[in-house]
Image 1 (cartoon, helix red, strand yellow):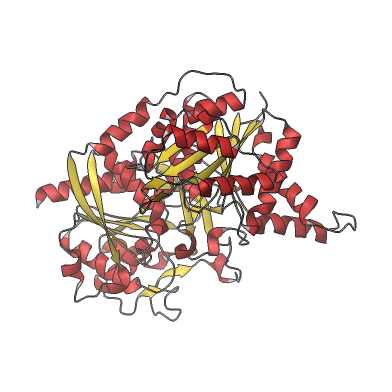
Image 2: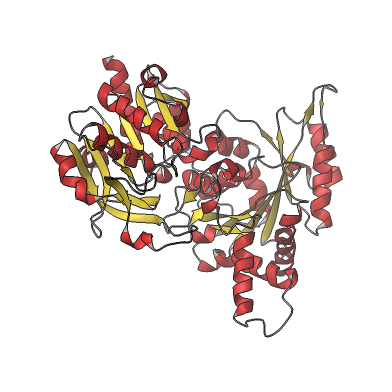
Length: 537
């Protein structure tokens, strides 16, 4: 069977949930036995989101092969339990960069390089790339931004050309739109949807299916009206109501028969009904917890929860695995001081210190860690959280005054965290960190080994600075053990504190590998430790 292509566009407003709809549809098709992947095309000029402030675009998600990508790829992996790669996220910046580099090499033989055909040809090449591997029956392409935006026009044009070239039953366009409720008039309004579809049609693309986001159910007469004005079949006007959790959306879309409409449009063989039993079991545990814990997330981007999206979702997966409701409490690390730390963090069953870059909020993170260490509250540090734990230990246990990370203080007398030699010559910021999956060996008998149940693991990284092994002996003599080591470089990946119920910190990002079907063991055991702590109070 030739690979089929589904394109998901959005209109009226951004943040309607194209990523969740794409992931949910992919889940339903996967549950029917098809092999599916999803890719995201982003209309911004950055080559990748690696240099974007998390407040701009939420977290930067890292794939196994070290690509810094959009956070929607996290949803794809969490729903499908299949890793994504560099090929699954493409930006306008990447497209133009490739075309310009080819032009510099003389690939266009002196021709004038233009948006059509050169930019659109490159977009089409990238849209078909995953399909040409032969690994997938269906490739879903989510196009970021809104139809009608100047920057997304080349993508829509590429879709128009591809539909023409591939043939009528090889592609399907799903347009996500908003049906707002006007309180004053007391009714749902279809006009924004009509305008949005008209914009898409003017660009030469007629949608096959409309997914209408709404706060209220859309009655049949309104669906008829939308179908009539938007040139789609009535049973292809699909309602998408606000859900209690994003993990409900596949079941809601199944009820609305979104997968059946797609199968019919693409003339796909009708395989068995979707196998969603394990998904339903997960939802059952998620919605009927038997215990509850309060976990503090200490970070510097807490005003925008999307900045820590994968961590939040990992807590949902691990909470469900423990049949425990995880109540996350957010703490801005800049506001935590030696004087207020005990009052601020009292009553928590666990403390997680989040990743981040730069000096802002560094001291507050260390105060939170000192409090967790001294009060014997379960503690979990990720990336910068692990580096803060090392610096805090050096200062307050080993008595090394002025101990620091050279990221925060280049002239520190005790560079507990330092740049690797290979990083010292780098001047470019984008894509130059230690990125992607690296091996790690866990010491037998350690807490980390017990958590994973094996000695060889692989985890994803995104950082520049490393633990300075010159201090390792002093740390271990004082009870802070390095229990995870990179076998090739000898770099420290996991530290844990002896004589503490649960104090584990990792240099890597475990949250990136947590999925619905495979909750991450570090998060699962951290939630379990918090449950034990709350029972022992």
